Length: 288
Image (tube, rainbow, N blue to C red; front, side, top):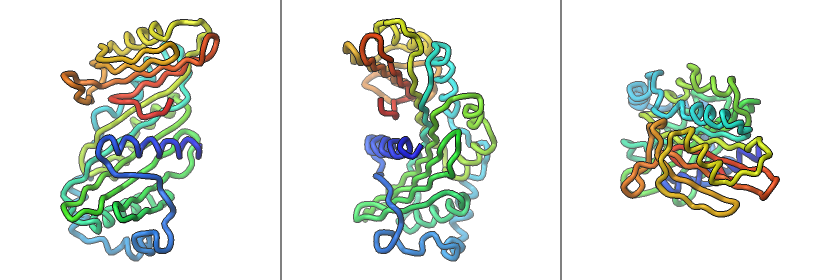
């Protein structure tokens, strides 16, 4: 799980960079490397201003803040399992561009409040000349791992800050699927985000059949399951990537003159070997 978590944090950084977010690998908060040695002390957390608390209450107290796309993993899993694909990796990634904060200190105050809400998570902070970032990882669970990141750039203008919340697991079943319909999950979103975040969902698996079928035919079956229309594709002998549009999903990314909201990637290790598939909406966020 630890290795998968580190890989996922790396993928988060890439996605954040593409979408103009700021982020990199987290290091433990200690000594002069952190933004204040006592950042996570209970005493300091208790000093968060009343104005900030009132602002948060108005922005994130609604437990029904379930964003569009929160059920996309279930939709992907349903289509892939119908094709007898063995699922072994999935991720839910929600990201919000935070506006209205005028200084890094305000971002840090918001982070202190988040730590009060998640005191049993493992917290670490990174501070460089370019950015300030805090990362929190949930306690180990046999079903999934949750990660929270709050990052801000050091600029003379208005602070450019982002909140990222991700959930990742290796096994997809009724228990993991059910997590995204629970009050706990809804409360996660309302506790973490100030508004409605942008959601990215991704799932990876392996075709269970031993029949040698061309990648294009396998891709056509998956595309049909999502009722997807191809926008563009890269097709090679042992690799295929398709960007498409599907009415099943509500999110999208403008792609030239089209609204792309699903990517499908397939990789074969040769005749008689396994074929790996990754499906993401609106884009793929898992390495394959």
